[in-house]
Image (cartoon, rainbow, N blue to C red):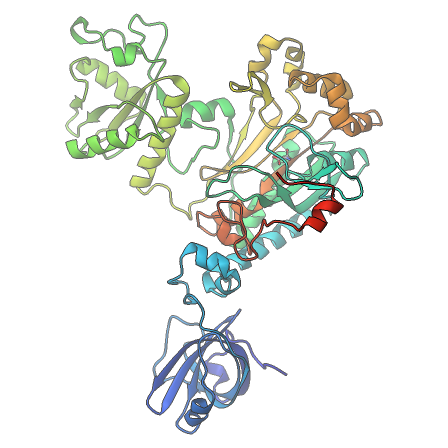
Length: 592
Ligand code: ASP
């Protein structure tokens, strides 16, 4: 028997017990003729005490950090208790010990507050994973996974695996491809998602499917993306949008209850994509705080500004020439100093935001107004503006003017920034919502064609189906598609699918695919749709991101046992790497 207890379980009521523990040595503290050590395992840390009698044995068998040690001894009440440790009331008076394995000196300290940099910790990920902070993250991941499975199992969903070696298809991101030795010159692709397979399972009659599944996308990596990531992937038959939303709202409520002990009683709000874009400036609104965006422009006015003429017959070009004028009222900031408003202006001028400046209006506590564009605005105008923005006394109204897309994006960022500055975006304040009624198509300026806003299998709203025959109307077709958003982050999305062959063909054609091309790429799906495809729909959630949000942390990497770095590399195993000529020959491949 290697151990009678773990390093996290002994308490004061165990005092006097004879125990055996095994674990890793976190610290060694020698005080003259006695020594203390902290012994760590997955469950916690327990202090070891080597008394005068035991200490000489240590001199003959020196024990260093990260040695694997087995100790036997009795549980003692500590005189100097450590309230920060669950085991802090006791220590083990060691009677015997055995070094199970020695350790080289670790390249960084194995503690939450480590001295190791990112690259170093990635290289020695197996050591990094010993740190309690990562252990807690992986534990949370496991618990979320289990909660999801239990919920779906309870509703009769089946976990059915789908293949990893599939066919490369256009649309979406770039595929990772795998050469086939048995079929020289041909390649599999790794799935970007099991989308078509889960739809085929619906055709096969497996009406409730789910999988916690790896997906692969060969994209340029932002800090929070991974080339391989995990989705909770689900699909159901004989459902309408409402059925899907209700089923998965239930899933989230269960996960919040299990993981955070939070009961969300009320239904998740549902916001149209259009409202998200106008009121929050994006399709993943952070509704932990208000400060919604107001549109100050109306094309009907002579000056093109919602409140009519400017003061003294002046023209304010910044507004008149702008495609859009947007404003938010930031509560409690009317007393911002010149320095603070200048600093905000500089913040907006950074290339990431790209605005030329901003106009502000201070709604003073005494009911007066002060604006950076006072010259143009009468007191009445400022008052009307404040009323439209819902600004109360003490608010600072921030106004941006410019081209629509850029101004909206900048206002969205500014709103989030002000939310941060006012402490309105707390990690533990969970505010999920559904965003619905997405457009079916986006126009890709670079490729000069329509692309699927979600993916090509998403169905248009039935009342917009006829618009599929009119190219000029593509931009106004809405889809039966939905996203779930948590605290300003999209954590899942899905749609009711197309299940009729002719509509699916129309969709492929709308995306610029010839009939032949559509059949070559997706013939299997179109074929299946000829054999009684049921109405169906589903959703997929970003599992890594969901875990990081529930863990209150920014990076998904810290919730993945063995992640890649920003260059898509695993620096621990040193992948990707070259393969030898023999392998290349077998695959009939040459590298350039
Ligand atoms: N397969 C889709 C995705 O990965 C999700 C879905 O529509 O179910 O985004």
